[in-house]
Amino acid sequence: MPHSSAKEDTDAQTSIPHWYDPSSTGVTITDGDGSRVVDDEGTEYLDFVSQLYCVNAGHGNRAIVNAMIEQLERVQYVSSAKRTPARAELSDDLVAVAPDSLSNVMFSVSGSEANELAVTIARDYADAPKVLSRWRSYHGSTYGAGSMTGDPATRGPLEAHASTTGAVKFLPPMTYGSPFDAETPEELAAAAADHLEFVIRNEGPETIAAILTEPIAGTSGAYTAPPGYFERVRDLCDEYEILLIVDEVITGFGRCGDWFGIQTEGVEPDLLTFAKGVTSAYAPLAGVMMRPEIAERVRSGGFDIGQTFGGHPVSCAAGVAALAEYDDGLIENVRATEGAFADRLSALEREHDVVADVRGRGFLHAVEFADPTTGEPFHDPRVDEGHNPVKDVIGEASNRGVLVGGGRPTTQVILAPPLCTTADEIDTAVETLEAAIEAVF
Image 1 (cartoon, one colour):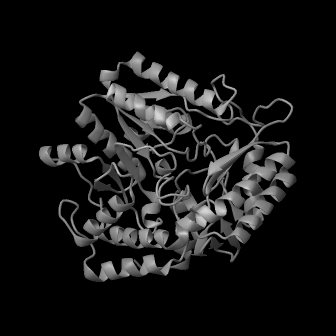
Image 2: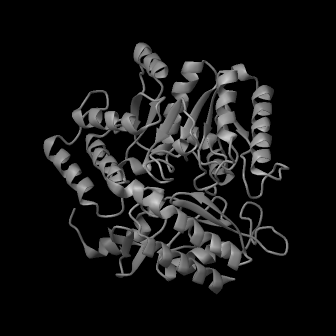
């Protein structure tokens, strides 16, 4: 078909984006380098959401691009039912940086599908139907992953006409807006873990295959667990013979200052799901890492399920190169810079009474807004109709040259820059966010 400029002009009508909002025109990105992207009008932005929390190595990384080209020149595709060197090399590299408990990898395509794959494996291994996940979590938007997602804005549309079974929710140990009556982090950890044990006992431990949880909340608000919480979760899993699956789709690959978010908690999972940053989003790739005994069950019993593009060789080549880039200073940059990032954001809470809370770890932070007279959100999109000023903050920041994300729910903004972001860029982005806050409020 002939290419025409007229066809290009109609792209906005022929292509429907994901998370489509008919009231927003969005930004058309045409170029990028490092922590910055450029739109179709030549406007440059600091990308403080890494597009979708995934371009961890930054835009325009030549080592990753060159690795993909080299693989394309060798062999472009290998069936996911067969073996190929790029897949084997990335598997070895992943196991080398993963929590010590994990020994084997099974690849998938997206984070949603990786979580579904992990749950399928867990249910078979445990011979039990239920999976527990946290309210306000996000695990994907396919039917299976969506059923485990605690965010009703995702789950509601998926289950409007059909729903899945075996998904049970429990309350997270949130430090802001907590449902638990606790005055200290230690009390919060104990109360939240006691609640989880109540849910386990109420559902029946023998019916539960796994607990699926993000080690640090992603788009639901960058919540970190109070000290001791994950150790207690691990103990409960051991006591009741339940598998612990950690969803590292956002928190993996340096985002939180270590290879995986769960490593910042010092807890060993039974399965770990990954996607996004594994290739720095240069190509789609996801997967599940698992303990040796779980892997042996899969090997000995076979696994007659698969995906055409699971472990695509070009994606695996990108992954090998991306992991090398993370190991060559990018994760260290997060560790060296995260303190200043957190301090700059915390200053917003001290200086602006509309900023109710700032939280996060590494290069994943949330800024929560609330009416200082009531402590309630200015607009809660779950129950309120009308105008949401937090969306205005996001739009104002974009107009001033910084892209930030809207949390779930949009009572907050999420900041998650590429791992190559400098201290000066952090200063610029936070100053811009502050100017946006002042302009809106």
